[in-house]
Image (cartoon, rainbow, N blue to C red; front, top):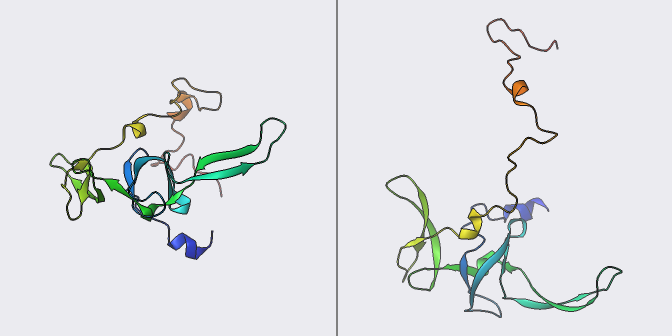
Length: 159
């Protein structure tokens, strides 16, 4: 990617995987769907069951070829998050509650200004965190061992 393309990348994403969005431009204009995948390197999103195209796939020794219907990515500017109260597309703003938690709110004319909840799918981890130490993990007795003493300067490598 060149520097001009990198300048056009969205820095602060307001659309998350699992959000309910409405397509505002293109052949599926006015339809709503759920974000299946966010491709940040291309400023694109894939909406579940929308923007379908025919893909010709050549057969191989381990899979069969043919013409398949797949979801094509849409540019992020062509979708808007749906307001949970009114059901209309809206802009997304950020607000801090009294207890200090950061929430997304619906912004724009004709919107309710209500809180847009964080999608449940983001709370589910695809790969669980390991509970036991693996073969490449450093043992805890080496982690807590003090190798440098600031007062005496012992432990500094000889450069």
